[in-house]
Image (cartoon, rainbow, N blue to C red; front, side, top):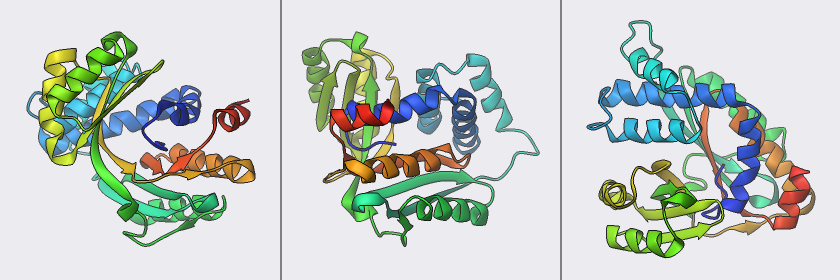
Length: 248
């Protein structure tokens, strides 16, 4: 769940993931397997696989698990996964995009629709909210990668559009068409990113508090908990006080 480009509003999901590491590893392994099947098992020539492996490593997924997921891509009994995207609205009018990998489109659509409707939201038609987001590249580096000034200068030199740093690390945003070039340039300057992938970045955000905040987080948590759902994006903002209250 990425509310926007600042780290503070994604910590809620991280806490939930830490408590469900097995489920998280399963999702990461699925992405590694699909990436390897679609583009080959060599991450040097398969950008999607490189990104999937980086994301898995960032969550401390064991190397053996990653290697097994890559080998799984050549199995004769491997399920055929389809990439699907859903769009809808959550409590408080928040726009939500859900990305999934599924071997049964009807099952996943039904599950996603139910999670929206049971938590004060509604599933919309394709294109109903994606127009309010930009498809961009996102890279994350740990604090140890360098000072805010060092990372900012590296991002600027690489051709990135934005760089934000705080106590949790550095987040760099770049244009979709520049993603590969920016990723490679930053890797040369700062080393391998903790995370490097394409995301949906909201053009504007909605402030959410009170009952809407609790219900929204419940809905997003339910979506994120679905085995078929890989990523959830939403255009919300919450104050530190509201986030702390929800995490208590």
